[in-house]
Figure 1 (cartoon, one colour):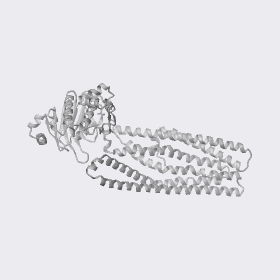
Figure 2: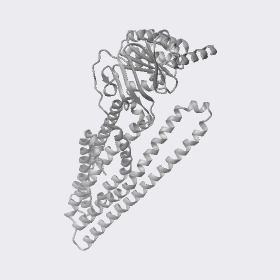
Figure 3: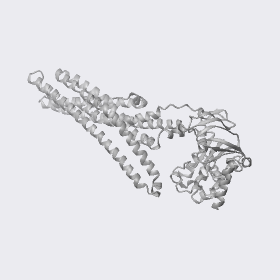
Figure 4: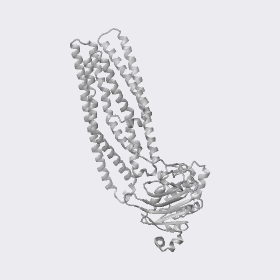
Length: 559
């Protein structure tokens, strides 16, 4: 009933949990005192005003400690949410861009929001209630045993029947809640994917079909939710039977004791009024149990991420950056994509060309550390790329490079905390400064993903941000695809100028962009089949020449 790994993963919450239990226990003592005073008044003892005053004092103290318990619950839940979300973010940061290879974005979002919200209830309510429900019956047993030991013993013995019923239900609940959470994340994944691709679905008039698929998945989620609720209601019914039955049994023993003259009217009345307090804490624990179980089901997925073993990347100092690959093999599955390729890139403009699926973008992904399960050598200077933190030295620019919602200045500040002069300088280099000034300067608003920009404007801003970072190596993965000719030519002009000082690796679908590159590597089916300058490759009468001539003919035909 207690997940120790989960509890000790947020040790900062433990002091607040202890204080929460202490305040609840003080409230119980006040309740015992006020009940005793009420019984004394009913049994016509003297000093009525004294007992009434004591009741009022107990009620005031109980109100204060209840408020304090609520504050402790809030403090512990606040720490839990902040700590777990921080741990998740740091872990994903260490894993790097490769985290999407194992977990979907929707699953991560659901874990960091709904999943951790469920864990808030676990720490703020369930754990304090668990310990309080152990302390409260023992406290009441000690009090009542001085009045009637048999009644106290019967009440105490019946209390464990509630957690026994919870444990019995838990065996079924854990499996069911794991399925529930799995169905929940699956529904979230598909909803996010359909939402992101809604325009495409509308274009192909496939939105109705996917609507029906979502309906089926929603119905499956509804069914498993109903099963969870049914299980919860059945278990609550069992706990109520045990609680009220145990309380009734204790009252019967108290009445028998009074009938035989073993206890007084005051003691009998006190036992009758306080007997429910034996079971209320444990009954309350049962009401939190199912929410806590749902949180623990989410924690299993959370710990699968937090406990994923990753090799710590070394932070190294490199002055002269270059890239080399030797006998490099890689495959996304059992089938290889790269078959032992070799290349070197020391400076200037280095091009990678080839047909779609030849392995060009795979090389970019490996260079950026997205995959580490390659064979052979892939080095940045003299360091294996999978062993070091390459981000200070490399910058990737691709069609998937993201612009955030906010101002242009905010987006450029991602690369560097630069001055406005530096920002304007890189914007001028990519030929978009005039447009930016027309739109309000660096404070121009950019929508999520740069949706209020054309493709060419968006890529120029992405390149400007990359230039601001001032890396030693730039990797351009189809950075000029699907944009206008003017923007494409401007970007290539900037890249050639940049290659005079930096190492620029350019993966391009359009071979005409790379005719002035220092070295071009031509790939086919995962192998580098040719390499050299543009002129040297044309003279070889091989794959490169065929690709270049084919593209030239198509462009002439299009013109």
